[in-house]
Every structure is written in C-alpha cells, then in structure tokens.
Length: 65
Image (cartoon, rainbow, N blue to C red):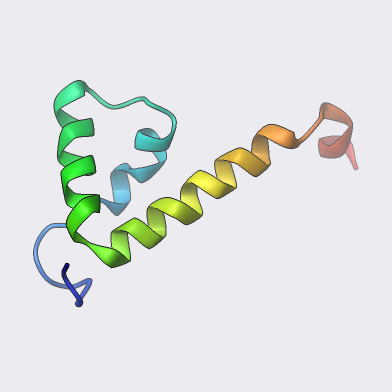
C-alpha cells in the first residue's frame, strides 16, 4: 500500500463515476486495482460511496427546505 498520496497516479477524480458504475470496463478495472493498493484512495472511495448512499435517502421534500 502506498503511504504518500503524492506518489504515482491516483484515481480520486474517477471515484464518483466508479461509485455510480459510470466508468468503462477498463477504467473500472484500473480503479479497482488501484484501490486495492492505495489506502488514501480507498478511504476516499469509502467516503464517496457513503455520500452517494446518503444522497439516495433524500426525498424531494428534503431538498425544498
């Protein structure tokens, strides 16, 4: 696992699309492989996935407040 988020290419800019299953098959494989070896990106993935789950709980009335 990489300890420094500044080392090498990271996938943070793709995490939203990855969570929403909006990447090509090749991009998704690249992101999945990277997440297995990069703790900082894996933590960002977990936060992004959690945010997407919470957004799904919102109702239209919640957005009008």
